[in-house]
Length: 84
Image (cartoon, rainbow, N blue to C red):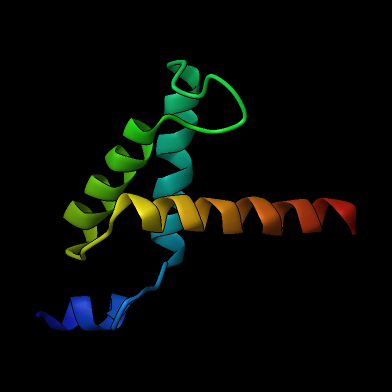
C-alpha cells in the first residue's frame, strides 16, 4: 500500500479531500445534464464513474458506496447551510 493510500484510506474508512469532493460534484453535474438522474437520485453507473475517476486521479481505492455516502453527506451539509 502506498503512502498516498495510507493518507486517504485509514482501515475501512475513506477520507475525502476537497479536490476529490470537487471532482465528485463536477462529474455528477455532467451526469445530471446527460439525463443520468431520472429522479431524486443518480443511476448506479454515475457513482461507478466517479469512483473510477477518483481512484485513478488520486491513486486510492474508491468504491461506488464511498461516492454514494459522501454525496449524501455533501447534500446534508449544503441543506444545513441554506437554512442558516
